[in-house]
Length: 79
Image: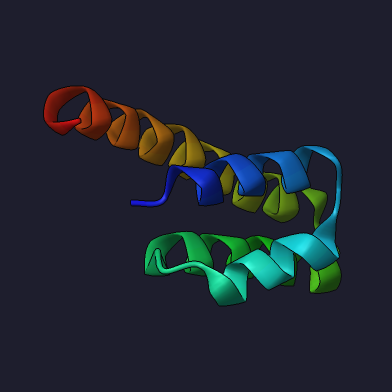
C-alpha cells in the first residue's frame, strides 16, 4: 500500500483537481483505488443525476479513509 497515493487522491479530490486525479488513477499500483477514481470521474463527467455523482464520491472517500487507516496500522505493526 502506498499511503502517499491515498493522501494525493484526497488532496486532489478536495481541491477538485480532476486532471491530477486522473494521472494518479493511471499511475497508482492500487487497482481498487484506480477503479474507485475511474468510477467517480466517469460519473462526474457524464452523469446528470447529482445523487449518483455524490454516491461515487462518497465511495471513493470511504475507500481512501479505509486504505489510509490500514496502511497506518501496517506501519505501526510492521514498521
